[in-house]
Length: 410
Image (spheres, rainbow, N blue to C red):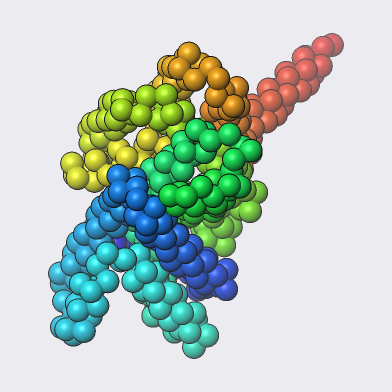
């Protein structure tokens, strides 16, 4: 449970971080994206039903329903565990939790906003103890809703994007603006939906999750060091130095990295869909099972249900084991490229599809390297700084050696 260890995330100095306008804007932008994305998916589902395409309509419907039900189940489970010791006795609270069960992220966003506003009000009133408590609760809600959104994004949005992209690949660009009878929407609308989901909902969701996760990890790690050595200057001013907080450069780098990486994965499955739609379940099921077992045995205390959910996330992005993930991804892309090359030689997007698939993966690796070498919040462990320190140490050793030799000369 995330709240069990959250007390170590906020230091006790009086220079506590305030719930700023930026935090508030992030919450409201997240709520807006979530509601807009859900409404867009429901509209697309209804359009497919109206156009007489029940198979694709039901596919979209279950892509919307199942991830949100899972998120509601996890949210309610966390809420019950958080109030085991001090249960909430107001019936209205539980009625709201049950009624809004399928759209639980909205409740989580509202809880985070309420706790944040209380923390800011406590800070203005110089009530630092209550500010600490409310900011801890804000961190819990913010981290947990980011995790829920991550699951919803990749189990709801990613399959719908693959569906729309596959239908675009099957249609020549000259026909995109046409609206034949029985079509749910023109291809230009599908293209806009794909771009919007990739550039906004999916990629920003990953950036938000990584930002919350990185902050929590660094603060917890720094607090552990601080407990061992209270006089160490490297851990005294952790919060003031913003250690663990992603800079704008880091967030932009992560955004470009995830945008290219997710795009390459979506394009890969869309290419396979066009050539062998009936066999699409084979690579998805094999990789999903592989990731599920990988997460279940690699992450301590991860339940099987959670491992299955995050196995679906790993179809398009990843959280752990970067090298292994990209080895599997490159191998899968090579197989899909061969199948696409021989299965759809006359397709208008024949060359572009392979280029985007491999180019997106390579671009993602490039920005991943830039992030860990230049923009990582733990400045003591980034590759470039390590190399610079090694060079400086070698140069210092050479200077000291030359000085010693000169002193030994008669």
